[in-house]
Amino acid sequence: MTLPVIGAALMVPELATWRDWLFEKNRDLEIQSFADPTLLASGDWQPLVDEAKRQLDGFAGRYGIHGPFWGLSFANPDPEIRAIVARRMAQGLDICEALGGSHMVIHSPFSTWDHHNLSTYPGGLARVTEWVHESLGAAVTRAENAGITLVLENIEDIDPEARKALVHSFGSEALKLSVDTGHAHYAHGSTGAQPVDYFVRSAGDLLGHVHLQDADGYADRHWSIGEGMIRWHEVFRAIAATGANPRLILELRNRADIPRSMAWLETRGLGQ
Image (cartoon, rainbow, N blue to C red; front, top):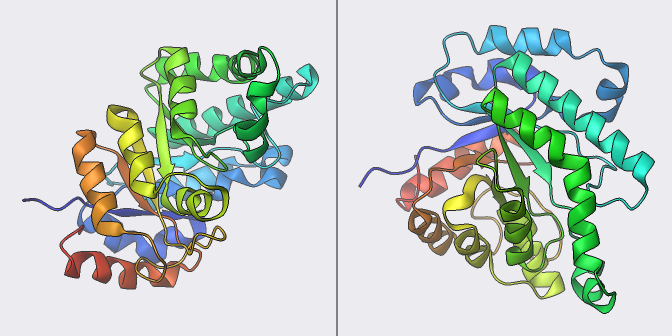
């Protein structure tokens, strides 16, 4: 059996350090420099794109970006703020297209409060869905035309089926699901969500992207794989069972832990 090839989330200045490792197996790559709100507000992102393209010259792996997310909820009830969110999504796609990327990570709008309270308000979920379509609809259409996949990452999500239903509501191949293992484990440990592998199985063939990080179930740790409490054998069995081909991205707080995480996974026959 061929083990899945695993890549990483990096900033543009880190690409040179990890270039040989990325090129070795054309690993999946996610560039996270472009989520910086200050950079987005200034609009001065082209030099970073140029440097990334220089570092990635000849690279044959899948790569993309983490899109804008700080303070940007797709489900904001204020129409003027939703317009700002839509503009930031357009800006993220500007960057992704300029880079030649194939995916952009975006954040789920569902909060812990939503899980416990939306159903108490008549039409609450329908309103949230309408607001998300208004904020994200133009970006989904543009992504379709540009050959970019938007992947919706779980953040505070307790019920993975709600996010899946939201993705289905768009009816677009350009919008898929992302599972962040650390976020799912935080939700499992602190807010009563299902275990990480359930999030993966729920995504099924909509799984387009996975952030791999370890955690303790209390906070969003971004620890090296094997340092926390996630049951990794079952997570990788669940990924295989989806039949999908998701981007597999180590998203570690300390990039120096990439070799240690890879050694842990390789020793256990989970990835390469």
